[in-house]
Image (cartoon, rainbow, N blue to C red; front, side):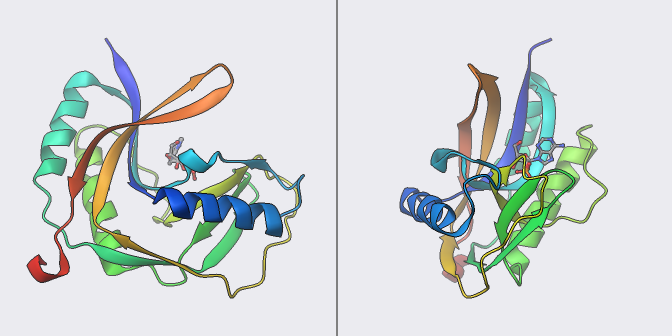
Length: 179
Ligand code: 2AM
């Protein structure tokens, strides 16, 4: 049976991806971890794992029916999780719309047999991987604002030593006036 490794996520504008890569280079030691490529910087809403074509189709149909408001993301927090070796960028206060959207997608995924982590959802953008040693984090004060108007489904593949994410579909969130 054909499967793909899938996840729902928020994309970041190209210009922001470039800014984050520059900031990361300025603020983190070169040996702190393995930098995630600019084009791969994203915020995962729900990880599906290896999914059959049939299940993927069902989850896409459900995603297309979602009527959730867009929201503003304030990226103003960073942290280090030593166990998975992840250095991340996130929000001091996650917007309600983000949590609602992620909870809905995660619940739909779980109902279709995609095991969901029992850990609470902590929205984040992974900046560095393989960061197992202590990492000096930049002092608070950084801040990027993103207006989120869409969410998307991605397929992840690992070829020739590189992780690639390919967007399969994208759906709009409601504008503030329509929310
Ligand atoms: P991470 O960045 O914190 O590793 C694609 O792998 C995306 O799905 C990544 O953003 C990753 O989060 C997320 N993800 C969540 N749970 C995962 C899991 N069990 N295995 C791999 N990726 C997972």
